[in-house]
Length: 77
Image 1: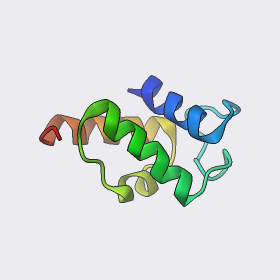
Image 2: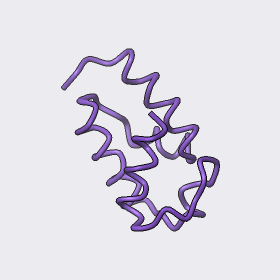
Image 3: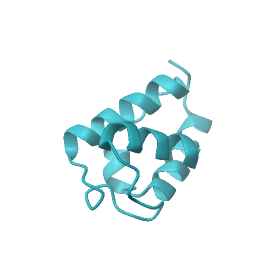
Image 4: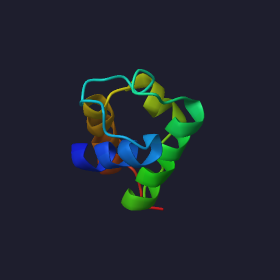
């Protein structure tokens, strides 16, 4: 999952100059880009991911764990 989250960040941010523990805002992100990351992950995984998830888990590592948890317990869309 970390690979998928990292790939979405790289695509949306337009660079890969961050590590898995860098907060999204420090990597150059903002709320619109965070929404774009979640939309990519939603499409890839076929599950609903609440926008708040991103702000509660602002790093690649944290977001990957949270997305896995949601994906394991949510119905597919």
